[in-house]
Image (tube, rainbow, N blue to C red):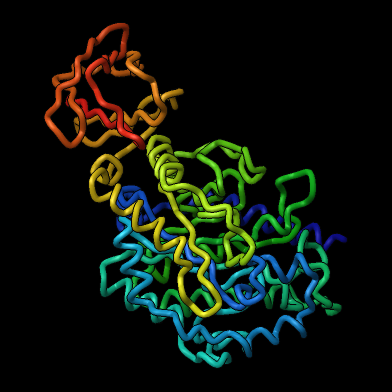
Length: 437
């Protein structure tokens, strides 16, 4: 008991010391700015879990044993995968970065790793997916973020007996937790050494070891060591952790899952937005991984509204695709991305490089800002009623519809601006009015 208490106290003290010593490098701070400027990215959930066609949590939900799940390795042969098409599809949609699943909770590694036999090179495909995507991203000028699961439903050295998931996968051996930490460090070193410049590491699964009813972890994740290793290998690389809580020391951006910053409509949120760069991720239907029965596709206007509102909250929008087992992207996703891309081509200037939180979210929409230009996004019909924008104290010089020279009548008073829309024809998706201050 004394030894366990000492270990826990030492871990806490180590985190406190790290909190006092972590100072982002100039390169890291510049990378944060670049990250915020991009505003729109593609999330890719894909792996052997795609084969059953029931989402990425199928191993846990169906209590598939390690022995039986490992058989999926022999069936994963994505002959229709085309890295160039993935990246060009993202670019055409107006996306500036890709976040790729390298290892999900099922423990399968999508690259040629020396530290696990359960990897892409042991499938019939035998090609390094991470390398193919990384090379194409570098070629086409798209930034690459790598998703990495902290939890593992397959390994014995993962502390599964204290975890909240993966209890039915047939493991009986209580392995060495420190060996698992070493394993993760080795894999992260591979990812940050062999694949060129990586924009960020996107951690997930920290919540699996949180004591129920609290936000306190019941294991020592060694985050100080892991984050230091990442920043040492690539100082520009940003660290984020989807733990649904206040950012930990050493993290460079804060993410929100299926919710706008600070929201908790899905049960994954609740944490207040920090001063770090922000990101919110969302699916095109209800599933992250390929789900053959999920046809609840979100409309193009609703996804554009999500992205605009995210920018209004000063957050990036990471939109997910769950490719099919053969490596092809669902045609429904392709069509949606094409239409979003057309909107971004016409209106992306009101999103890219902007900053939000200029005003609170309004019933009619939101506001983004870049330099001395304010973009008023009217997302909900208001008819011919005036729209009031609070907290605009700088003198407004002009107001006009974005994309043309049609002037909009306005009045500046009471610390805000009133826009009169009598002669404005509303857009079906987003009526954007540009203010110069």
